[in-house]
Structure formats: structure tokens, C-alpha cells
Image (cartoon, rainbow, N blue to C red):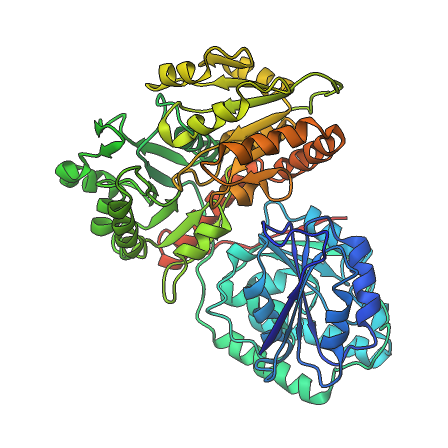
Length: 615
């Protein structure tokens, strides 16, 4: 298999794509150029396209040649052996995809790229959105002859009769044009035969939350149809194999009892605490019973930067508590807490464990010990039923052959109306929000700003080291310490500052919730080059080396001196935040929990598939 990835010069090579488009091709050289032009016109900024090619002609070469002119990241994979046919090519593309949602479409232009936006618009609340020729104002006239129309309808009826369930509920189960939530797929279970990959994914992954969007099936742009009698026989074999496939449990029907185990929860003030609170409230709002076990109930022993939990000493009581729940959502790593739960309750025994891995452990002055702990904890995390991370970096680090499924679920933000930013003169207003602890990097941020009249720094937050940082800033008049403030005052600070800065120096900073909150208000993010944090910022701000006051100061001064670029980055930051709402985060946690229970066969009851149709 030969792979070539060619990002467009204007497209960042890193970050999380907004959508992945998977196009399987077989001798489509005459269609490639037009397909790429139409995709360029139809796709949102930040999309990626993956062409998986089994051709005998120069389709792959034509696709690679288009990479220099299209405004999206283009990956071309040429398979020397077309294992599984077109369906096998789609599976290869889905494995290579990086976005949460993937759109599968043919390369012959019978699937209009302009329909992709409608598929994605119908996606919330579903696992798959099918472009249908047979519902609403859908039109299958592009099939051509009366014979092909008759074969298509007969095949559809046969599939519905033999497979029933979700397949029977769909108006067009043989469609090759659909959007699918990748986290809902069990790609290890699929065994494609031929070209009807939607049937394979729905049946093998147990997909039931399905929406349909009508579309017009267009005539071929060029090249010849690959539909043959031989493909028809493969389709019949495929139906027989799917009919024999073991039943997959339906999503959990009814409210769940969920126990969240975390080191920090309200009234503790921290990013983790805030995320746990939003998840808890959100899941309760969806009808589930959610309880939290944290250091509020079991106070931690703290020795400087070291924190220890007494969980092990109380394990007998804790294990009895866990047994009353349907699923545990464990947050870590937290030495003597998350590792104890994974060791004693993991390995698919008892109550399922969904593990939220926040970051690597990084304690200043104990780097070697932290590395040893991280390696050990990675082994223990493999005992969870499912792992959730907030960035692709940590997902890749946690993924392993034969290990639990790993999903990327970023934290969310509450979107408020975007404030007006008419000011174009005066110093660049820079905002820091966070605890005043050594790993936050204030000892590099403050020197980067002090004595520079072009910059005005406001620091919100408190901590044991605040007095040290105030002395570091003295006698400067362009650094202001506000301490802890109300939520309303915090929102006003976001709305009235140009930049939100996160100068952290440790890998324990894995996401940057305050950065996302600032981006939602249009603040341009300037952050340290840390895993996860840089993924959040992507191309909407500046990423600078950690522990480098000169580089940080230079980045801020550059923004102060280029207000046009500041405005462009502000718009990008807001758009990035708009795709990361709390509702979407909670929905994905709920889906991860139910998928885990379904895989375990816990509380799984037969449930009718849900099917909705969008106009």
C-alpha cells in the first residue's frame, strides 16, 4: 500500500479536521479533476479528503496532482491488493480519517459534493446520516436504464427483508453516500464484501440512530459503471454473511446510574473540577443519575506539588459503592486514585470503566519518577473498557494493538454573543486566567511583558505563589493582578482583552479550558508548545516554546504591531470555539458510555432503531 499526503500550503498540517471525506476510487481518472473542484467549492474550511484508490489507470496520480490547488488536506492511498473491494477501501479510509465525522462518497460524481453540508447539518444526535434516493424529494434518475432501477429497488427490498432492524427502517440502505460518526463504529468487527459498505457498518457496529437526507443521484460525469453480474453475486454473499452475523446489542434503553471518580470536583476551583461539573449537570439533564466521588468526600494528602488519595485504604467500601452503578467514568491520572481503580476494578470485570485520560503526569523536580509512573499508568489504562482523551496527541499515545477503544472528546465552552471589538489603538490587552502555581509559567510571562508599553497584562486567579509573582512584576505599571473574580467579571475580562495567554511549562496542561473560553469571546490564543494545547489552538493563534520569555514577548509584540492579523486570528478563534460546545461534549460522553455498555452486553435491551428525515 502506497500513501501520499499533500497538504495545501494554506492548510495547517496539524489540528483536528472538521470533517473527513473518504472517496474510494477504481479507474476514475476522468472524474478526479472535476471531483476535486466540486469538493473545493463544497467543503468547509479545515476539512480533509482521503482518496483510497484500487485503480489500474492513473487515478491516483491525477489525485496527487490536484493537491497543490485544493484548499483542503488531501491524502491519497493506493492499494496494490484491493482486499474487500470498494468496501475494504472505505474501511482503510475510515481508519486514516482524523475528524469526528466522516463522509463516504463515490468518485464518479453521482454523489454531489454540495449535499455534504446537508448531511453534516443533520448529524447531531445521530450516528449515521444517509443520503437517500427514495424518500422526500430524493431522485434516483441518475441510475439510467429501467433495468438498473429495477435491480436497485429489488436489492433494497431483499436487504430490508433479510436483515430487518435498522436496515429495514432505512429507505435507501444500499446508498454509498453517507456521513458516519467514527466513534460509533467498530471497525475491527467489519468484514466487507464488495461495495455495499453502509450495510456492513450498520449491522456490524449496531448503528440505530439514523437520519436520512434526500438527494438527487446524478448521472456519471465520466468513465464507465463498475456494476456487473459478478458484483451482484458478491452482494448476495454479503447479505448471507450479514444475516449470519452475531447480534449486536442495541444502545442502552433508559436512564443510567453513572459514578464519576475524580480528584477534583466543586467546590474545588480548577479546570478539571469545572469539566466534571459540566459533565455531571449535562448527563443529569439527559435523564441519568450521576454521582461524584472525589477529594471532597475523601480528602487528599498534599505535600507540595504531590497529592495522594486515601482510596486504597477505603477500597472495600468504595467497591461496594461502585457495584451499585451501571458504569464508572474515571478521570486521571491521579496517583493512588486512578491507578487503584484501574488495577482493582478494570480488566472488563464488574462495572464497566470509561477512563478519561487528561494528560501525562509531570511533577517539577521529579521528572524521572513521573516518567516511570506514566509508563506504568499506560499499562493500567489498558484495563479500562474505553479511553477518552481531549486531543489527538493523547489519543495516539493511549491507542495500542488489542487495547480498548480510544476516542477524542474535547471539552466544551458556553458560547455567548461575540463582543464588539472596535478598539484599534493603545496597548495590546493580554489576559491570563488560572491558578498561580509554578507550572503555569508566570515566571516567564511576566518578564515577557514588564517594561513594554505596547503590552498590558491582566492576571486573574490566586494561589500560594501570588506574592512572588507580584514582586516579579514590581514596579511595572503594565501588569495588573485582580485575584479571583466573579463569573460575570471573568466574562467581561474575556470580552475586553485582545489575547488570552497560557504560558504553562508542563505536559500536565493538556487542553487549556480557559484558552477555549477566551477564544469563544474572540481572544487570540498565545500558548506554550505543549501536546493537546497546541491542538486546541491549531491555526487560530500563536504557539511558542515553553520557558522562553523572549519568544513569548516577541509573539505578543508582533500581534500588537499588526492589528489586521490580530483581527483575522480573532475570527478564526471564534470559529474554532463554535465547534466545541458543551452540549456536543456531553452528547459524546453519553454515546461513549452507552457504546461501552452495549459492548459488554450490560443493561442492553432490544430497542427499535430511531430514524429521522431531514428536508
